[in-house]
Each structure stands twice: as C-alpha cells, then as structure tokens.
Image 1 (tube, rainbow, N blue to C red):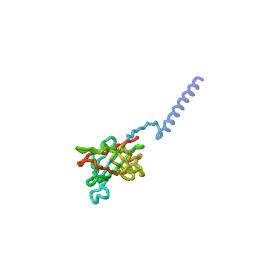
Image 2: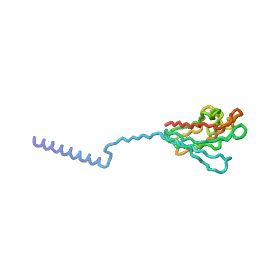
Image 3: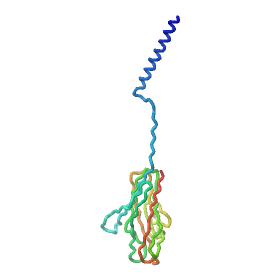
Length: 197
C-alpha cells in the first residue's frame, strides 16, 4: 500500500511538469511582458518676417527677408521706409511685412509694437505709427484710414493654432506733422511671439 501511494505521488509530479511545459509553449509568440514608452514633444514655433513691395512701388524685387525666430531665437533687423518728402500728412510705408508662422503650439499670437522714431534733434512717438492686419478692427479709423490702429499700445497682428504654415500681412502708416523737424528718423518695430504649448 505504501508503494502504491508513492506511485500516485510520482504520477502527480509528472502531470504537473507536463502541464507547466504546455503553459510555457502557449507563451511563445504572444505577449510576454509590456514595456512602457514615453516621449516629450517640445513646443516649436518658427516665425519668418519678409517685406513685400507695395503695388505703388512698381517693378522691383518683391520680397526681402527680415529674419526668422525659431523657438526662442531673435528676429533679425530689417528696414521699412516712409518717404515723407512732400508736405506733412499720413505716409504709407514702402513695404508691408509678411509674417509666416509654423508651429505645433495649441495657440500662439504675434503682437506688433514700437518705441517711436528718433532723429538727432526730434522724436516721433509710437502713437503716430499705425498698423493694419486681419486682426485690427476694419471699422476703426484713428486718423490713418479704415483698419489702421495706432501703436500707442501693442497691437495683435496674427494669431493661430498648430499648423505647418500660416501667412499674415501687416501694413504700416506714419503720421508726419508740421512740427516734425527735417532729418532722418530711425526706430524699431517689435514683433513679439507668444506661444501657448
């Protein structure tokens, strides 16, 4: 009787070994274990400024690259001119600015501002510089024509969301008065990029 009990016990161990072998074969080719995967996608924004001749300038090179901003870079300085050669009044810039944006950010915007124009003897404040874009009020007329808004405060000139490439146009005017002294005036237009990741 003791011998028979031993045989049953040995038979049970064998069955367990066969069962374990079958279980291992079922795992071949299937999912053995999972591995976690993560990635970090950094916010990216590329902004290129290009000047384009206005139609009244006739034939000439149509575009001039002002520079590019790529995720934290700075814009190169370019030149837009106002030819106030006759009597004072509202003078249109010789070029408009084209803003070309590529971004993976959820939302972004571009603001235009200025600190004004200065000569050796005189100063034209920023409120006499005017900007018009798709985002300025088309019904507003602050003295430079419909859609032109004063740069007394920064103005929104472009906004959007994630896109391969979007393009916006910004038009500029300057108010010249009888009080402005003759001379060459220089200033800066700042285009500030504000991405929201």
